[in-house]
Length: 117
Image (cartoon, rainbow, N blue to C red; front, side, top):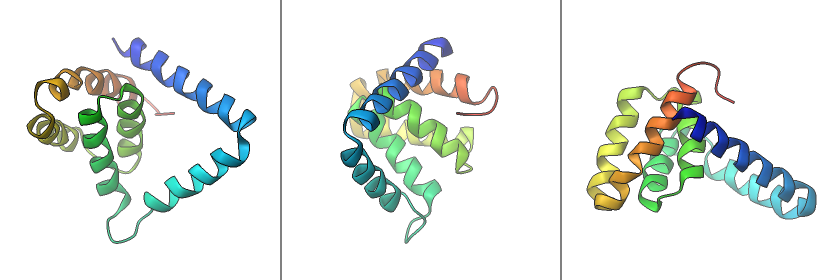
C-alpha cells in the first residue's frame, strides 16, 4: 500500500542523490530549470503542480506521481482537486492512465497521513 510509495520515494531520493554526487553540474542546471518552470509566474505553483500530476499520470511515471502529489499538497492542493486531475488524466490517457490512479492513491495515503517529505 503506501509502503510501496514510501519505497518509491526512497528509491527516487537515492537515485537523485547519486546523480547529485556524480553529475553535480548537470543536476544543478536541471534543478535551476525545474525551479524556474515551476515558480509562480503567469500560472501559480499550485496550478503547475496539478498540470504536472496530470502529465505524470498519463506518462505512467510512478516516481513523478509521488513527487507531484507531494509537491501539490505543499502548494495547497486539496484531495478533491487531485481527484479532478485524475479524472482529466483518465480522459486524456485512457485505460493505461486509469491504472496509474492506484499510484496516486498510494501517494495520497502516504502524504495525507502526516508531514510530506
